[in-house]
Length: 115
Length: 114
Image 1 (spheres, one colour):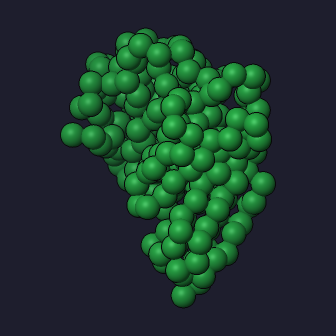
Image 2 (tube, rainbow over the protein chains, first blue to last red):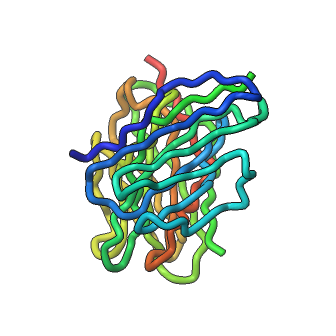
């Protein structure tokens, strides 16, 4: 199983809603990532979890709240978002073997629209 | 700080023609280099990677890339492009070790004419 699975594929929410994006991998990878990608731009790193602990937060606004319940799951909780937060949210994972090469395995993404 | 430059924002080729997408990186040592492809509305798929050893690396879908240390380049090539290759291509670099930050280039959009 070499997949990273993200749900939902599409999400439309109002600015007062609370929703969550989910990500799952069963490759035994111990690093998991959230990226945000706007149209015609490269992915931008948001958060990194390493061994289920938050390692990197790229100064992301608190209306985005990540959670890593176990080594296979990664959530992104969304609350009080703004229309400019509309984007493709990509989850990725990577193995943490010695000499981490940084190779990422990406999911298909969740397309978020904030009205 | 490491950086990646993809000089071409948009390239158009005819189906069956050869392709070369350029990528230059800035980093003191030899970094770990990657090419990813992204079809519209999809995630990123790894095409190939270079860590060390043979400087010509083969990837999936008939792609190859050559690492040239003297030019700080890692250009992606394909001898004959198919219409299904139309997509966005991202070059990326990571300095390895415990660094989790993959630095992406801005991407090159490939259009394939029939």
